[in-house]
Image (cartoon, rainbow, N blue to C red; front, side):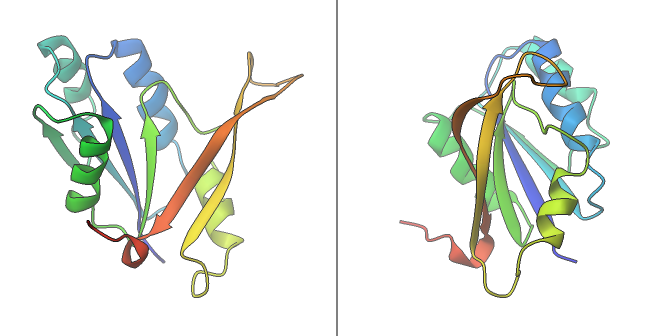
Length: 146
C-alpha cells in the first residue's frame, strides 16, 4: 500500500482553523498516511497550537519562507510518501474515507496525477455546492524540480 503525504502549509493561523484541518486529516481511515506540516515562521500561538498534534505529525518545519510555493516545495522535499497532496489550513476532507476511496479507485501503475473537485458548503449536508477549485494528488516520481 502506497504512502500518501498530506502536506499542510500555514502561517499565523488560529487554533480553531488548525484543529478544523488537522482533525479531518487525522480522521482519514487510509492507513498509510504521512502528515507533513510546513509553517512559515509563525508567531508562538500558532506553533503552540500545532504542538498539540506533535504525535500525529510525521514531519514539521517552522521557518521563514518565500511564500506558499516555497513552503510547498519544502514539504515535497521532506515528505516520504509515494503520493503527495497539499491542503491549506482552513480546508478539510468531506469524509473520513476520502483517501481510501481514492486509492481503491485509481490504477496506481498508470496514473501519475489524480484530481478532483473542491466544494464550499455551509453544513455537513450540503444542499447546494459551489465549485471552487481542483485538488491534486501527485505521484512522487512525476514531480520535477526546476
